[in-house]
Length: 164
Image 1 (cartoon, rainbow, N blue to C red):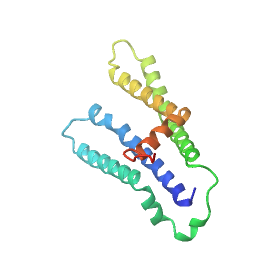
Image 2 (cartoon, rainbow, N blue to C red):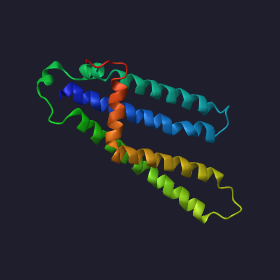
Image 3 (cartoon, rainbow, N blue to C red):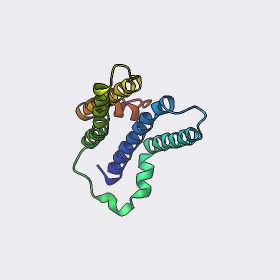
């Protein structure tokens, strides 16, 4: 694997990270604040720009890698296969998601545990469900890297006919 391919895989992982960040922020548009809040338009523009950046980085990683890396550094191949790099990256993203989601989930469970029966806890239950879904995705990224790798290669090669 060439250094350009290594950077391209890293860029694809950054695109996945950006996409997950945008998806994680989407429920906040519906759960908090009024629809006419001035900050909501600003947040929507930033989320849209982040999503566009994730798509551009996903679609053109080799172009970006060629602009980042000079031609002289191309001669040194890396020792690991692209699948190994992708599996390691997915595991790291999954661990990052777990490390940010588990404390929030723990806090919400504590609030639900210590709340009295007369308080409205529906907001906390929504976040518990959301955080449990995030834990599921993070666990899939950590332990199911093989399935994610198949999905990654399918998306990359979609529409390309294989030579018979």
